[in-house]
Length: 397
Ligand SMILES: *Cc1c(COP(=O)(O)O)cnc(C)c1O
Image (tube, rainbow, N blue to C red):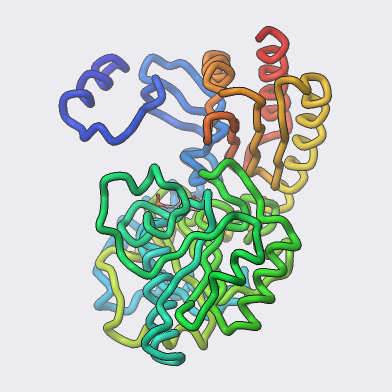
């Protein structure tokens, strides 16, 4: 099918949930994407922070083929070596001690919410079920996770929503303190709000929040679905501040493009999931686990966290120079490894479109923020080419 056939086919058959970019993609290679007609783009979005090793990484292709020939799926009724190997490697990146594998980010957060509730109820009493989240957050699209999400547009039309969720203003520690009560089970936050426009929690707020949770005996749950797996220059974003959350959720980059999520927790908190309390048919199947295992192996072997940190520093310098040159066009530059937000002073649809026309794929969030989540294997030269393109667009607009 050519691009037009695909667009017309979709219009008559798929649900209309997605506002698509005006682009069909039929092939990927490294940091490049290609349309059916063969036009090449530089991918600065990586399938929304998913394809951290780029597209069709030869070693991932090799594991996918080899594992597919050996075993794809048997269900969680069986022990599987691939899960053990992945669990060890994944837990080795953090202070956490146990992991539950699932299939997506929303499902990881849903699992974390269930885990927190059940753990707190059993240890601390029937009334400890409330989850506190922040305004501007994004935690997923299932009923519980959209209720946890601090953006009203995600919730429109889907009520009645589950009880037991409170949203407090972003960055306001007093508001958080006031919202905590005998009913609070856990706090769920992103270290850097992704869909919210690449907004980091201020350092003193994050440290204060961790201290507050410890003081009140409330679980600290960090949603690392977008920030995890090396994206920000460390394997986990909370590691920049040396925090020790009780529960961490991950998904997007975990299996290099195959759907996978995980809930990681301490030994103590894992008591909230006794046998039979939670489960999934697909979660962590042999194929996906083998791939995720390889993804982490390569990230560690090739020091892609260090690479993301170095390129982030260079990009930060370059973008801030651009901001000085165009102070009336760029409001703020937020760079955390290879999680990058360029906040414009005006709606960014035109700039976004001009970049696409020049062959750069990125994302526009919250109307004014150009968001870059490139594959962690991107080169300095490719980022420099993007900067040149953006500079020329800003100079002309
Ligand atoms: C993408 C995302 C989710 C939801 O993940 P899905 O796999 O789309 O369900 C949750 N939280 C954060 C921070 C995300 O970026």
